[in-house]
Amino acid sequence: MLHESLRELIVARGAGVIADAEEFRGALDDFLREDEATVGELNLLVDAVRLGAVQRFLTVVDQGADPAAAVREAGLSLARDRGTDDPGRSRWAVAVIGYALGRAPMSVVNDLIISESTQPTPPPPPPAVTPRAGTPPPPDSGPPRPTTVVAPSTAALPVEPVAQRPVPAPPPPPVPFDARRPARRGRGLLAALLVVALVAAIAGGVWWWRSGDGKTDDPNADETGSGDDNSSARAPGAIGDDELVLAMEVDGLTRVYRVGAQTGDATPITSGPLDQNPAISPDRRWIVTLLGDSGGKVPYVVDVASKGQARRLFPESGPCARADRVGWSPDGSRVAAVCVDATNAPLGLFVGLVDDQGTVAEPEEVDVPAAGSLKGALSWVSDSELVYQQYDTAKGSGLHVVDLDSGETRRITEEDGLFHGQPDYSSDRGLLLLAVGAKRLEPSAIVAVKPDGSDEQVLLADPVLYPTWSPDGSEIAFLRDGRLFIGPWDELGAAHELTGLPGPVSAPPVWGSR
Image (cartoon, rainbow, N blue to C red; front, side, top):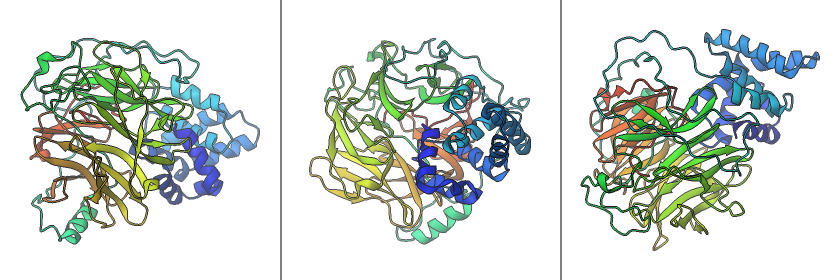
């Protein structure tokens, strides 16, 4: 979990890392995995240092004040300084840094995670784009929490459909940008354009496969489908082609929801309190999500169709007890993940066969160069080819593809100092989406490229996060300031906000299978 990762950062770098806000931000960028914190959370933590809230907390604790009271006072001060009416998030930022420094007990952090509502009161809604008509998904309730997950002692809130909230203000109009790609070796020009246009950083996208087309509910089926709509053959209750799956923070709980792409209607799948980074199986029956426990992010699989209990995806005693975001193979027979240890250091790239319960008994490591620099999400571009990401502080991050049959690897992106993040493949388009920017963990441009690295084109130069293909490859969804936008893949400047969501989106959305 994030507060534990911050404590590990303090142990590794020393308490002096928080003396300067810029140094602290750089340390966060280098130390944290992409899926451990949103951009908003990182900015809030840095503001807690920059605006003096952490120092105020330390001062009053040194004078004998109760840490919980000191967190409340410093958090209120931080909220005022930031001009926000959401003191809950500000108290959280002070508390987790205080915990990392050994000055606030875990009970203070837990109380804020489970009790504080972190949703700001939105302003009166201006005129907004009317969502397209559609049929909302049926009410659903989350599965029982697994007994192996360490959760706060306070009982989780009931899992039930959530009321809609007022519509937030629309974003500013997109910056005009010529998306026509120069010659492939003209990367200097592309890099310059991106650095100028973006706030930028490695961001994410998610991978998809043709949403159950031609598939049965058997995850070991060999058919890959033809692109026709066979959704009627899916298990009742499976995720529809017109539904996204994403994590939102509502009433202090971060849960995974199924959301109507046309209506914005949201129904929780998991019960929280810290569930993020979902992936959808090709038959759209299963989701894998990372559930928070005291040791980090643990992959669990949930049978959405039958509302079954969440199960550990990988054995608890194996190398993949903790992992980054998981990716499904197009035929649904295998999953892949970058597995990590208790300190979030990568152990390697692992692939395993999925059984009829959606779990993996024996994940096997894939031999790739420089496995210690693996980061982030994965994307399958065929049943035997897997795109993965490697991170280098000096050279940026690059995307590589490994052929699981031959073991051969090749680099897709060039070493240009930019950060290329979290690919998402569309078989209908034959294109990988990726986020490309100048710094890690900040909004980036949306770029499309063929799996061999050719025909690169910038689809949107605005600084956004986490692009993901629709199941048929006709649309792309992405995040801007915690809000979800959807638009035609070749005209993302016309994207509209999906309004009515009960809270800000806190992790990468997924639409097509990945």
